[in-house]
Image (tube, rainbow, N blue to C red; front, top):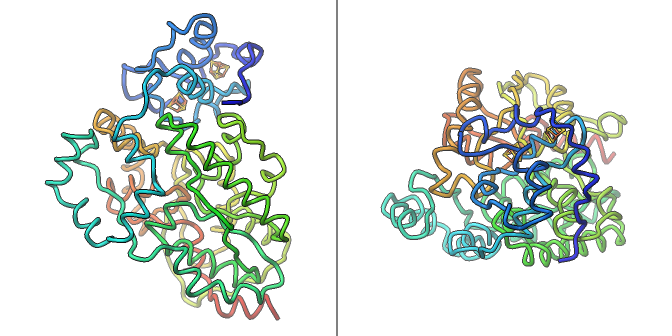
Length: 415
Ligand code: SF4
Ligand code: SF4
């Protein structure tokens, strides 16, 4: 695969300060992981000379949370070094478990056809025990529920015909979670953007962004899917949409940062127009370009969790800018701690206990707030937090949809 290769000069940027080791959630919760400095720049010097220094069992423990990259004062792409080594040097193909967990489009398409049966079956302890024993998916894990109607189906039935009335247009990359598991988030996004005077278009073709495929070493398939997404986004921009909005922090980080470096996809022309809806909305608010009409008497107490990939994007400021403008919202901002699931990582039986141990600080912090809900942009954090605490988790776009008088806001903005 043609990708940007690591230069020895990038390794020379590491000054061995060990700051990255202080923030690594895996290293801080198990002695079995040597940590970012050792698995990243230190070992890379040896791996470049001889593949025998590639230690897959150690590198597989990395969550790819990228907290080490956020912390590194010298800009070393530590997580990328680790993932690149796994991509280029692993001798092992994916097993049945990896194929099942990573092919979200295929699994989602099948499961939504028989959603009640799929949800019933994956909720049964007997099924969980069988999956644990046969493919290695941990029997203590709760599976996300599938929706009976896909978001795309809802959009074409109930929204598509109304979008042309808006002067401004955006395209929406919804991701497989919204499409197959939680269409309500996509519906909220359409309602909020319409209230602000923006029509929402779907991409001509959309595939799973590939983050789970990449985590499970299925890079060729991820590249094909990524190229479809970027080609469709380019076409949408050429067709006149102002921007491409998203609602998932991990999909967004993957498509913006990892497509060129890990998949060799050239998306420079698209990248600047691709971002989370919260960034787009926060900028509209700062520029005074939209009017907001809030629901009278709205009251809610929430706590905000900065997902690791949101921290890597550095975009939690946009969400907080929006949340701070909601009257009646009591907002606690949690200390940034990893929830431990890291996409498919926490589903694997060998990782489950470590995953829960990593998340325990965050779970305790959440319970201590006595909030009604957790707000975050990451769907897998949602699965993990809802499984491990007593609180529901909502995306900031859904919270905005709940707090706004959508009809009055739309009237104010398209007058
Ligand atoms: S990768 Fe960055 S944070 Fe880690 S030891 Fe090197 S310079 Fe320090
Ligand atoms: S990406 Fe996360 S788990 Fe991996 S080395 Fe960096 S901090 Fe540790």
